[in-house]
Length: 630
Image 1 (cartoon, rainbow, N blue to C red):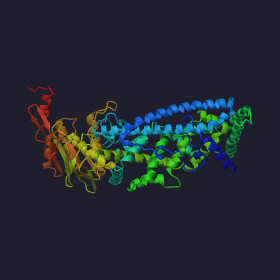
Image 2 (cartoon, rainbow, N blue to C red; image 1 turned 90 degrees about the horizontal axis):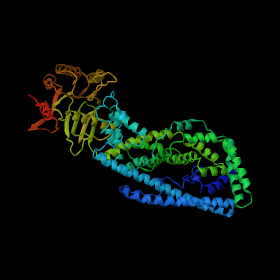
Image 3 (cartoon, helix red, strand yellow; image 1 turned 180 degrees about the vertical axis):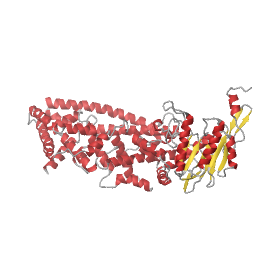
Image 4 (tube, rainbow, N blue to C red; image 1 turned 45 degrees about the horizontal axis):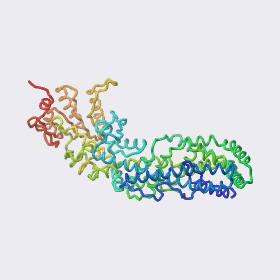
């Protein structure tokens, strides 16, 4: 009872002026666990952010920040003068220190509120600018994910998933490394219709929540500056409790005796020497928890991470969802004896305190009231009450990041194409397009591969669109596997696994020729065929690294070897002789892309047609490039 009375009294004194010099903390929360704070996060304050006029609001916010900064600085000097004169000459001036400190805290809070608002507005403005760049397919300034390329992956290296002008640049709205890695793993994952359908439903609902998507991304871009590894933090969470019961004695005596000494000094009842003695006594007392506090401070996550996580959890708690997947991802933040936003807000306050123990104002109050014991008590209590679900929250936030990325992409591109997963080995695409090409100029194509058909032999002129079409099919398979709608009016397909062999290059470091690299890819396809896997393959310019005779013989042998398997796909070639296989193999069909030569121009319509290509243009293209034929 005595401890509670003392802490109540001390908290009323300290909460008015504890966070000077950028440490505006809510001491009500420090001393009373479970009570709601009057100093909430930005998203809990009465603050309106007009995201449709972000640039205009940024200018207004900058003016407020400048005024508050000057006022805060002036008041800080006034506080210093009152403190010095009050201690040395006019004791009653010290009474002004408390109301002036309260005013200083108000200015600090107002300043930080405007700074946070400015950060969010700048993030919103940046997001809007990025949306315009993506819309016009100007992707050069976005992270390209080059490090995620993998030559051994079944399809990731051939379909422009990563690198310059890639799908990763187009769809990635994640804001930290763990979210980015999860998006990459989804992009590279095996095709799974069940998971894709679940994601599609969630993305469809989220895409309708524009403010949610914008604020979710903006919070991360505003507050996540430099990521700090949380390995030490999770180690601190799993470590034994360092609080000892007898620490309650200095925790109570410090604020009690410190308050009495301070009041005695102000009223003139005690000489300054008593204050000096009390401050010296604080050195060994605080030394008992110095190493523990130092370790805790080094272990705390970055404040920007906590601020972002707190904002995200508040979104989870306040928004309403219908989709089952979204509800399951919302549950960790709303189910239980406490709200995640409250726990994260408390951790942000306490971690900010422990990480700023070297601050001048903290040092003054620490030696006066032995605050370290109070802070340690609150930290250990937080660990005991909230520590267990912390890692779960972070992992779930990564899933939200990916879903928000895909939903924002769906909203910006206005994706409405119908995707249908069926149990039959078929593929049907209506008006399918490549997502990385300008939508206004991209030529759409239809494509059908029914149950009786197995292999499409694709012939055509150089530059007529064969490779682009094959990549269009492949990248749309990746899109729908992510849970997105396709870049097509309709896309119907069975649960194929995707395999490609399109960009096979030599490697001096591995002493591998491009021809050997292609053979190695083909072996990977044959291994899957022998295992009976339902694969949809895309083989571009098959066996191009050898002579014509061997290429035609090898291509026919490969095609016949694939016939007994459950594999289906497209093989492109310049060898028109292979088109005659349609007469010998009932499950093989010919498709082609054509070109037209008019005077000195080669014209393309980029439309796929049935049957083999009737003419080729290599001779004319070489002439146009300056090669003279005699």
